[in-house]
Image (cartoon, rainbow, N blue to C red):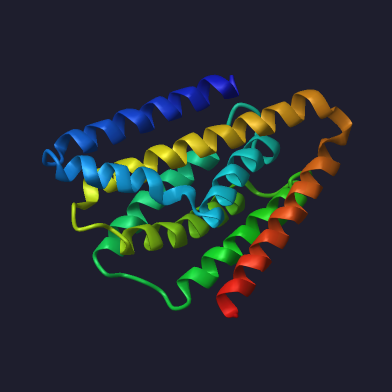
Length: 200
């Protein structure tokens, strides 16, 4: 059931991205789409996307794992539009690195009950930081194709995280809490490292 929902989410994201790219001008749209496809492969964004997928499978009600990625994608595109128009917050890059720490903590605590609204709210808040940064780096070739690219890659990374989370649940059984805790700790350490690099 969860896999079907994730496939539907990925297909919807792909269709939206292709529609956005089709609306862009020839040449400019292609360039901006390619820039958008490349942009999310920074370590902070990549780790955050996979973590959202894993957490969503591990902590959300059964059959609702798509809520986490959907929340992230919606907040991402809305905040990216704001970022493209010049909206920002102080110490944005540092806050993004701390969002990786947040997702690490969420994985460590995934086996404990957390109100769904709180978990999704934290995802939306973190996603808004990533979106502002994406929007601020909108290329001159235009926002629509660029947004289509980074939304598509983000959806793919979420899907990978969901797949990893499902594999952990299926194959590790009682040890899944230990594995999620280890992943969360590693993610938190990576976030602290990224923060330290920015502060250096």
